[in-house]
Length: 297
Image (cartoon, rainbow, N blue to C red):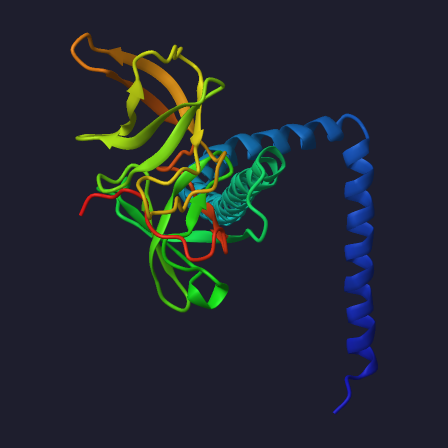
């Protein structure tokens, strides 16, 4: 049912009245003196409502702070995770770089010693990595990752990029055990350069960091700092030296002279850093058929 015309006219009249009232209020708002009165009313209303607004703001502050703290915490956790991941990557990169640098330094030493020393013809160095060593008796022996399948045989000499390390004492197809020159059973025929005084290098009992060159004739004028190298001499009749001549062994750091003996003993600092080495070279085919030098049982 549709409204009649009177109802429509009445509604239009009410709407017109509202429009006129709105225009009048706007005119009064910007005019004087009624504008000042309305402004005063507005300020009064603000002063009345201000405590309510302040109270509401204070009441809602913990909520706002909690929301802000939650957001900051979530962002901080994300940033922490990103930074931890970044630090982890940097540590791995640093470790890789340091390991690569250390390996490169040791491997470069083999090229340097090959240039300095002349090994017998037919010698073919085989580079191997250490895969096992005892943390408590590091001076005795180590295991390497090359064996008989790589041409390695018992009694072949083993060197580092700095000097003599030891000899092979046992093999498997893929591994070998190396007895170090600091082991109590080891002995090496050696000479002091440039004089050429001969002796036998042995480890000092109870001190693997100190090598002794025994049986050096007292008349030999040995000085601190002179170099000791393998002599390549036979230790006794019928036994051939397994170490080719000229491999650096160490440097003289002290001379013990006794009035009661015809020999003098030299203390030697080994060139090879046996406790820190990661790579060695086995001098394969160096003197085919060689047998062990003087060794203790």
